[in-house]
Image (cartoon, rainbow, N blue to C red; front, side, top):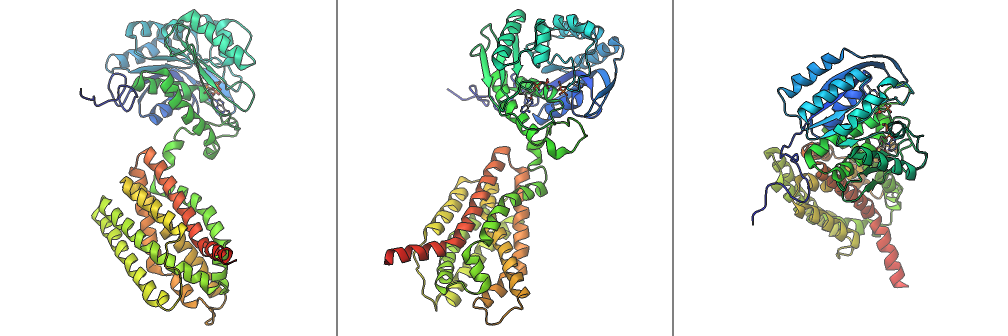
Length: 516
Ligand SMILES: Nc1ncnc2c1ncn2[C@@H]1O[C@H](COP(=O)(O)OP(=O)(O)O)[C@@H](O)[C@H]1O
Ligand SMILES: Cc1ncc(COP(=O)(O)OP(=O)(O)O)c(N)n1
């Protein structure tokens, strides 16, 4: 038996028809403020790696507060748009949104019957969140006639009620019940959405009563985000689902992929600062994490800040700054540092071996060598005249094990993220301690004067800037999974940095307890 290049049990990166970039057509209205309609659809399609196309049904004049006007161009012109596309391009999925009036619906129905796209998602848009109508009341019957041509219908609760001619559901159980009845009536799958219900949860459920899904109701749970920026969630969800469905061919897999993305888009919506009413969701929140080296470096910095604050609060750092740190603690720190540097040097050498460019290879190889030089310098100048345990302490061991594990895993980007805190946090702490020492008049009788003077080394600061840049650039080239692993490795190393500075105190405490 031979394995095919695509997994047969789990969708990876090809469309159901084997294409990596699904071609998705949105048939919808325009929202010039960019939060809903075709603008939201194209962003959502792109967010999932699809190739987006748009046939415009209607023009709206709207912003985050209201829809002030709607213009529906002649329906035959929409038909011309649709035919221009389908005459030339294979369409892997269609998402249908705002239709405006019955004449438009009839054209779309005629075109769907002719073309029979493989995936049709219908979001039966009727009324915007602002309360403004996006479908003429007289067109509701025509909209129902379109339902049998859709594979998935994604009504919100008022739309679900209208399609059934019933009052709106006020709890999740009756919403599901309505979803089942609509699915049974039209023989397709209905996505029941929890957005319009109160409560801390916001579930969605795929409903199909004809055995198309693994069960009649597949519920996907999710928390409710406390934000008023939910403009365009329905449009974004339906177009994202159409895109992922074209790739996976499985509604449940598609919803489980799209729902966390929409949650992230809602959570990151406040950072967009668009409009004064119900603002849009942040469609590209997942790219922005590392769309430029600067954004990834900033995200790493956010992780490092709480650890730096913890480090500055440690008795070891405060004692180093005041000069009152017991010598025994300092000696323990130096001895552990020497042990650590030996292991660290090996990991730096590994980064050099994995580096994609000669410049980086040279940088890490040199850093690895310098590390060994600093280790022997520590032994020659500091430790040869002092008494300190030479046994590897528990923090040193765990920190080095963590670095070695990341280096064994083989991702250059992840190794760099694990390496970086030793540069970055050490350089920051060094700068702070040096500045405080200089501000205090650089007292010559300070017990750690030589150490503090050496701390703010400009060469080390320059090397740190390079190390940050190499890491941030590697993050941009890395996959999403790798970036998550990078952030995880970076955060763990930051925590070890804090623990490393606190280890002398714990060692002294343990020795004292043992001596009792
Ligand atoms: N505040 C929220 N927090 C989390 N998810 C939400 C929130 N509001 C809406 N959603 C999700 O957004 C999608 C659209 O839901 P809904 O608001 O019900 O539809 P519409 O936008 O068509 O009115 C659904 O997946 C729903 O669960
Ligand atoms: C042009 C256009 N189409 C659809 C909508 C409605 O968007 P939707 O995602 O259903 O949700 P709200 O924006 O109403 O929350 C629209 N406003 N404009």
